[in-house]
Image (tube, rainbow, N blue to C red; front, side, top):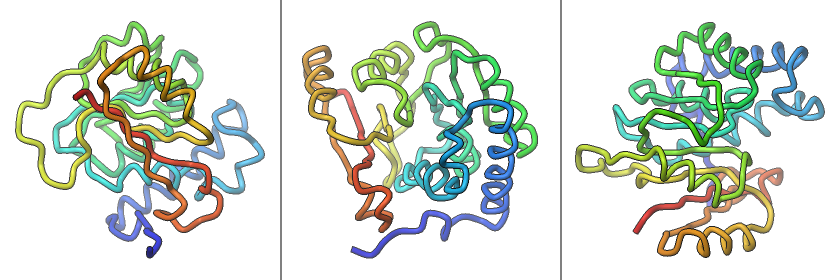
Length: 214
């Protein structure tokens, strides 16, 4: 299987914004713990490319996404850049992280990015999709999603993610999936390995997990 480069299909402006975001992320990480200092030299692969794997399918125009536990805006900021007609909420309980995401979003001109400071359990907005990057167990992510979800008004365009949870995970997920199924029976769960998709050894134990109501 030929490896896939998400950025090959982006506009020149989007790629410039992604490059600027890497610089901003490194800058703010010096003062705030947004990502591990040990991974700063690998931001392009370990953080940006990892999040861009979620662009393998589209999020439909005018849909609303929420990133639970956004940290340094991952994956909220890359998704807001790539899907400018979507509304992207970036949620985190740590105020200084949200302030950093707000500042980076302003610098990047992301009017569709809406950072929100608070606990996921009391998030007040309605969304069609939830995304996350190794933030919480699947059962917790689905609980937050189920409390915030609303239905898309139109027929889903071809090539889009099915509405639900689309998250980045790593390692052995058997226990997480078992708890999810025990807590919320009847869900459809799938895993897509990232190493064959992206062609990078770093992603050997990483995958995209999708969860939908049946």
